[in-house]
Length: 245
Ligand SMILES: C[S@@+](CC[C@H](N)C(=O)[O-])C[C@H]1O[C@@H](n2cnc3c(N)ncnc32)[C@H](O)[C@@H]1O
View 1 (cartoon, rainbow, N blue to C red):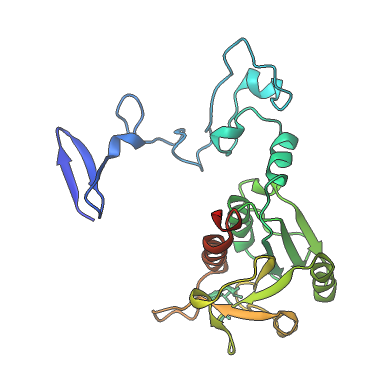
View 2 (view 1 turned 180 degrees about the vertical axis):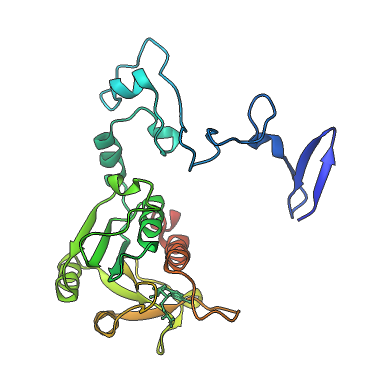
């Protein structure tokens, strides 16, 4: 992608010929995003300040947030909304996609998978194995999700069967088929393994299918967080908002 300088400000030239000003990501004084900029989701302070008065008469809005400002990492539509109101709204349009993660080693990827699962508005995240999971990377997105713990693999598969959800293992193991050319079931649970061991044999045996993301380099595998994001995106391309049709 070529980058051009025009009229004293920088522009990105997009591959299809359009240009986009870099200044869109700058503050009003033309300064680049700082550690407290809303452009930086990891910044200590993001979001909006106190709501101007008079306040709207809307039961979904939280008076404390309107008074203090809303610094949470939520989309603009949910600014000043109470947590339970956001969850209720998300519940009204959850996708029938589930995600499961084997938690044998307090894997740092789990937080990242949970955050992506929130972004794709999945029905439920299932944690298999240890109850305590590594929340770093989740950015408290789990508060808006339904997270279920299963102490053992049998309990997990039984819960999926009761809900009519098809378990699909995601790992680059022998017998897997390429994700790219596979249509995933609409009501499915994508199951990911831990860093290191990957999916255990017991989980692979219980899954209805096993898919892998084709790789082209020398590394044995992607990290589980990256693999999960790709797999959820693949599901959403087919079934997001029920295929948008
Ligand atoms: C570090 S990998 C596990 C080990 C891997 N099976 C190996 O042979 O080294 C951790 C998890 O990331 C996911 N993963 C990584 N690369 C993948 C790929 N190319 N296709 C599908 N899943 C992948 C899987 O869920 C896997 O269990």
